[in-house]
Length: 477
Image (cartoon, rainbow, N blue to C red):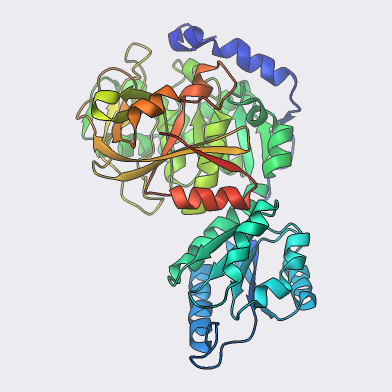
């Protein structure tokens, strides 16, 4: 146990996490002991145009020009997203729908595009009977079928409606639909103990509900990878972090070298194990060998979610959003200032590229970890003031907590709390604080406390995704 883990001892984390692990079925994975996860292939999505084009400017339906424009936009999205394969066809009967579904695969999600009035309602039954998640895209005046989407959803079908003239919504539809098959191809590495809601801590339930594999990594074996990290790669990592920093405050040369070596080792681990997500439940005890915070930042910047304190709920949240919007999340602790209608989020691990792997890095300082006497090396990232954000957390594998906000303050140098901090204006801070985590049946502080912040307003997409995945949304505040 870490001798400096005051916060972990205070919150009672170690014992609770260990007890939850006792009833779990764990796969202990290492490249030398079991085969690595398969590289993710393209996710198949079935696109079905229903009905014949409207003749000219008559009737309720899409015309041939609109259909061609939709096909062009779909082709562009398929090429640019790169990890989806579209099986596109037309259906004028239930039999044609069945044939397209068989071609796409038994579990393929569906993008249904209505072309003519009441065409979809005549051919949709095989999609519903096969439990295929379905986005229904409806152009204005393309028919009256749109009004049945909420009725199908209310009957338990995983259906959501995007009714718009904006063809870019077709790409959003594909992004939403790909989340489900991508989760089924996901391999998560965990340094036990797992934390979070009971369902999220169970690898069996994660597999059953989301399709992802959770495998445990022995920390002692990983220590060998730290020692074996290539010196050239470690020096390059040190140079990258130190040359890019606005200021190096507490960390000394040894602190930075240790953290850089762990960062390289974590990147090697994820590549070696072909994994798409990481959670470390013992990170507060990593000071002697180097905190993993720089490594977590680096992984998130590369599109690989990494969660500290073993928080499986936060990790799964980051994975859902990574697949949906291609953006990293900032997992952090919450604290309120109701006098300003504000919620603070703070943590010592933060992505630099919140706009995605191809985005620019945010400015940062190199700091000592705030809860172990300023030792170690972690990033203090200065996020954009004025940026709209979405705060979210998947809990119990079936509910998404979500709220919008806007960053109104970022400190020049953080004091109190963890290093990376944002102050966000929210809808109703007093109400939010009074009802914080009220839907959670736990006394575990980390499970109650953590949320994940993403750049952009994604509240509407959260509701769409929840409908497609058979989840519910609780809007906080």
